[in-house]
Length: 227
Image (cartoon, rainbow, N blue to C red; front, top):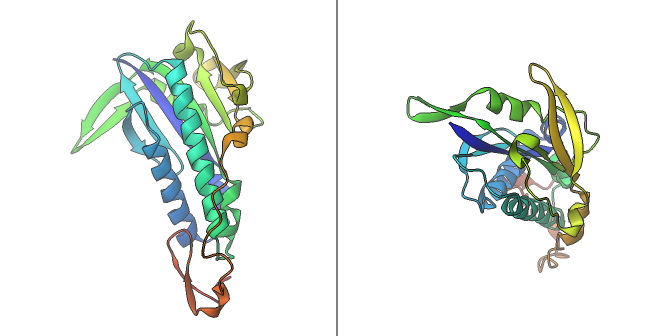
């Protein structure tokens, strides 16, 4: 069957979880993945929640580009708003809590042939196009936050982007086993301009260090002496 694949992926994930405190990093990542799930305004199905990404899909007709742009924008803004909240409320000095603001998002969109396979009580999405959309994450782009859409998804759609998106430029990616894949890419750094600053924390300035324990923004109970 034909269908649509959409893969938001957290940039900087591997370094974040391998070079920081696991208990804190996993809570932060879980929180951010939940934000990506809640921003699914298109009502796409979820195939898998992966360590640093969520594979969404839809069988049949593909969503209009304009609607997908709205979802990408909403996801990006909600994601970075939450990072600002974590930074605002941070009382923990560990590597995870102090470097979470360096995380970002990239998005892959593709249309192709999908197959839903039942394995026990689970439904697994399979097919060459599922492999391709994951392979496109390992690309030659020098950017960490971008939207990449294949020509198989875009087709001849009229492309009108919000001002903060810049240009959806043509790009060809060489993918092992697939060859040259034609796509278009928009760098999303301009979207930071519409990410709101959270209001000041009413509790800020109180004697954080006076307590023997405090609550990490990631939801982890911490001792004051934690480093």
